[in-house]
Length: 120
Image 1 (cartoon, one colour):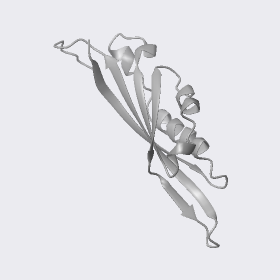
Image 2 (cartoon, helix red, strand yellow; image 1 turned 90 degrees about the vertical axis):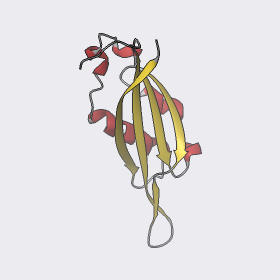
Image 3 (cartoon, helix red, strand yellow; image 1 turned 30 degrees about the vertical axis):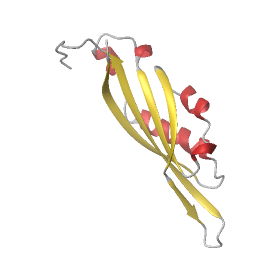
């Protein structure tokens, strides 16, 4: 059965002083999770662990995002993380690094039977 895209949730996280892209990414994913309980699997009679979650992170320095740490914070489902150039890095008035902002998009898929009428 093919995976069907069911849910997309967005989040934003910051690190005000530390310029830690992983910390900001964790906060962005947590922000997205708080906006949606991601219990869509229950509606289809599937176990929550069967969900496939693609996590896309937008950060000023995507190479500094610890993808394993990000994937580990999902409460259920199998997560894969891709880090992209994005987000926003601010500069203080004195020219030193300031607050960083990271965006997250969580896209949830379930393996569902083709041709079946699903009513949610």
